[in-house]
Structure formats: structure tokens, C-alpha cells
Image 1 (cartoon, rainbow, N blue to C red):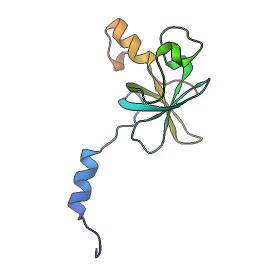
Image 2 (image 1 turned 120 degrees about the vertical axis):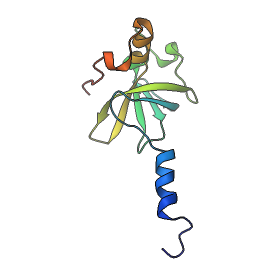
Image 3 (image 1 turned 180 degrees about the horizontal axis):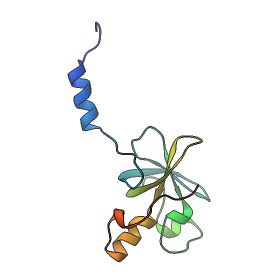
Image 4 (image 1 turned 45 degrees about the vertical axis):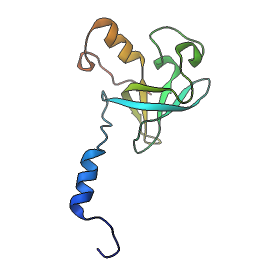
Amino acid sequence: MEGVSFNLEDFHSALHVYNFNSEIGARVKGTIFMTDNNGALADITAKSSAYLRAQEASVHRIKRLEEAGIAPRMREGFVIISENEADDSLILSLRSIQYMSLTGKGVGSFNLRMPL
């Protein structure tokens, strides 16, 4: 194509380097960029933002995200537990990772599909 500074091989190579796994159960890195009373939005370099519900922020019962150390600019690893089909966003969990750490079991040991 005329005027395009890359070829098809370059494009496929870039896709491989920046391949994003958005499957349920996948572990992803993200940065919290906004919080509210119900949860937090995270940038996980996916097609859309991802949401961390307050009840998925910790294995402990918390009233505010700050109790679990969740605040804007926090960078963390999350597990994708669901997809909100209405807006094509992903639902994240820290609680699942904490359970895995406590029990010594991997992601495959848990049913991570959660109802919306």
C-alpha cells in the first residue's frame, strides 16, 4: 500500500509482541486510573477498560477501596473473572489472586466465572 510505513510482516510481528490475552482466568497487569464507592477502573492495555469491583479487591471485607490499598496510579496484577457484554468491558479480581496465594493453588483450581 502506498503511503503506509510498514508492511504486513511488520504488522503481524507487532501483533505478536503486543498480543493481549483477555480470556477469563488470564492474569494481566494494569494501572488503576479512577475509583468510586463501588470499585475502580483499570487500564490493562485491552480493547476497553476493566473494572475491579470493591468486593473483588480483597479477601477481607472492606468498606472502601483505600482499605485494600487501591488508589489511582496503583499498578497491580489482576485476574480477569468475567466480561460485561453490555459494554464489552472486562471484570477483574485481586481477591482470586489472594486466594490462590493463600491456598497455594493456581488459577485453574478455581472457577473464576462470576455473575455480573
